[in-house]
Length: 231
Ligand code: FES
Image (tube, rainbow, N blue to C red; front, side, top):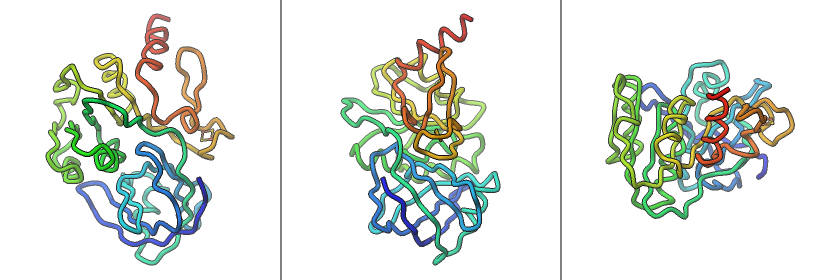
């Protein structure tokens, strides 16, 4: 991991999302599912973003510009500089036999890079609207569902599921696919274990997603979740 001052190469709309491309600035892309802290100029708090695309000479991040930090990143213009810190956290294990990528909403962000690293892998994506679903273009050939249908309704057994999305989706995937790998979304302040801003309580224990995750094994998560639900 390292910190670098990168330059904005492009900002493009992808449905309701925004693809931000920045210069690599000597940064390694890391493993799929790892994340970077992106600091837009003039803002104190960086935003955690998993890598979406490892392009020649560039890193691509998919943003959902719904808060001040993500809107500031989406407002960058080519040539603007920003601080980038990473790669951070634990990514997906790639030693799987029958991968199926499952993404919900902005949770599709790490999947294009994951698909590239795995080679051929089917994908199942869920979105809240047809406009959001335009982002499925980042994963050509993906099966797409739009609410009120959910990805878990299409999930078939026998796959090594690698998933990223909102917590309710991940909980449902964990129940259906006990060997799944799940990338959790969480607000993060430091990105390296110092602040507990990313801690989630699972089974009574606080787990810092920036160092223990963001990718966790469903088996590690399912037992604490069952304890929580029984409590
Ligand atoms: Fe600071 Fe995880 S973001 S401990």
